[in-house]
Image (cartoon, rainbow over all chains, first blue to last red; front, side):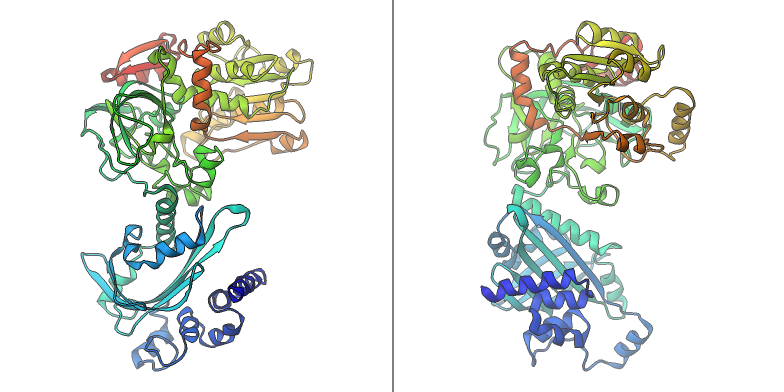
Length: 234
Length: 389
């Protein structure tokens, strides 16, 4: 627990210093020791995989890029979509962490997710809806798991949408519950499927993620998700 | 069922629509026995509230009988006669726990629509546009009430529909307007707008210890009600300069607190009034702040402004320098119905306040179109209409 509180402190320090997103995320996820490793790779995935250690097949880090990927990088075709959103929920970090950690429950409040199937303690299979009745699928591994504090994940090689992210639960001041921060990064390669995937979160990914976090809050605080679907109108 | 549907500015129609059903476990369905048109419904009728969609059922002040409850409803059962807050609150979030029900985090499924405009989402409101949740309103035979355990309060035996109905919205709005004035013995309270909310603000100011109450309006029958029923001194702002009159009536000090019970369609006089109407007509200004300007100048130094009339967007030419240099305190917000309703019902039961006299007209719901026109143009001395589904 002591190391965890150290990590929280270091993240606060990083935010106060006004450092770059990459550096900030690195310190949130990994703590001081991991910052350098993350900075070398300059992406959220890079930080996450660095923390997870070498030898894992998380596609998308700096090495082993295909020629098309390199061209894409050069002309900026597949820029990563990065989203960061935070909401305060009037519940304990433990309660929120436990609900979130059961990934199969995530579609309850994440509208774009069709299903999540947990395969083992580390691996899960994700199916999301895409425009025009399409679906996109990927396998993901938990690559960092700090009970009641943080869950980080990354998709495996072969994902329709290469993605990684983390959710962090941090006590809010004044007994106001828990600050829940989600950071996501999508790398969308070329191709028609990818064009659909790019629209996965619509034109405003931050708003979509914010909306999903709000629904998580509604579910955890009020016990239900506010809706008007199915009500009468003229 | 029959319901009043909005189809555009000055276009409401009574239509046959499907009955509402339970959608969430904390919902209740009410059979509405009495509903009304609120002054703030006129902002919708006149087309000043953004994010309305044709077909939306409107209305937010109502009373009825519980006919169905969701599986998580704890305090209500079929057959209960209840009055319901126009504002929907989850009862669990930080704001509801602090009795600030209109700031609820969880009752507005469209909170994200408000974020670019307001910075944050606020509570859902029945029949008050998609910005406020898009909930079907209560000018209908039935309505679905989310978080019914918190929003519905049982009507004490012996109270008539006319007595209990204003406790849904107009009375708590007026009462909160007075409560936000932090009234101390000897205080003089000025109330702009002598419609139903203004009348309740005047009566509430006395309940909370005001020594004198002054009403400002231009409609003779409303001023008469303020004088005779709400025991206020009156100013007709079309006959005299309201600011000067207030100063003369308060020994040059100005009122200790000023309540705005008018809101975004205030009628100004002279050049500034013309300026606001012209800008609002072409949507360069969403709200006409005439009352706010006058309150800032009229209020005593260090006094309090309490804003209960609805504002939705942006205003121009606010005399912020006067407000700042006079050290005014400005309190405002949509009302906290669930906080105030129980004590207001008690006041009605005890006979401290007559809540039924604001209803000058009763009509069947099917005549809603005519009721809106009469209320808007204040024909036939109309102050408030009770609609019977």
